[in-house]
Image 1: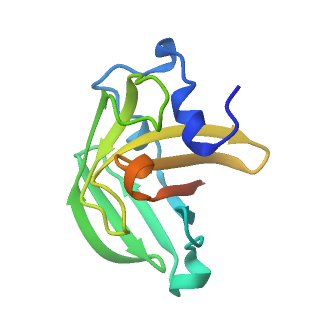
Image 2: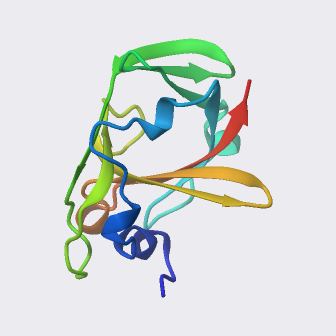
Length: 144
């Protein structure tokens, strides 16, 4: 049973993984609205930084980052599968997304999707979150 966000990334079954070339993040029209980022320290959120943040993964391998719904930057991204340090847990193959981090996070991140009554959530866990306190970012899907 997974009890923490980091543990949730460790508890996936290998059969849950999409094919390496399947881009789950760019399959629909819309964007991911940043909810917060957590480390061992304080939670960082739109309220603490003074702006909202949206991620738009394009089918062309470009990630558009918006602040307050206005263009901020565009960077290439790539989805893949691989292993990351797992904080004492056995390494498992997980879905990865790589893009230049704007927030204090690693460029290579494990990602997971979950759905509940509030909607669909994206969690990005920095490659070194176990060892250097890299961010675990959470987003909520907003359809356009």
